[in-house]
Image (cartoon, rainbow, N blue to C red; front, side, top):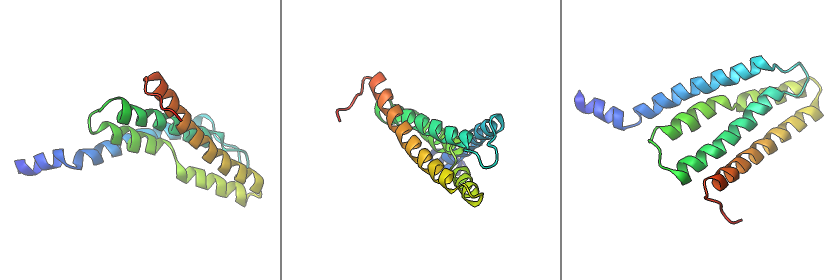
Length: 142
């Protein structure tokens, strides 16, 4: 019994737990953002867009900090990255927003939203990682 508990603690059990806990926290934060600024029918879904872009920026910061600046506890990255930020950002809401806009006859807006999310998310993760590297004194050439 003791060996099983030790194996569980040293294995994937704690990882699953911190991912689940982080996911709940991230999803609650995302839900709260949607309540603060719900999207009107047929309008650009600013709340989902902002959540996804902000989440990607946070991921850029996190990845530089945990891979280039310091070695945190083994549960930090799954808790914050996969859990909190995975629960906060939302491909499903993004896809549903695109679908609703397209089904509502707003195809140009749906395409613009799809592109703006992709470009915004990529730009956010790149810029946040670059700024974090610079602030941490780990700038890269190129």
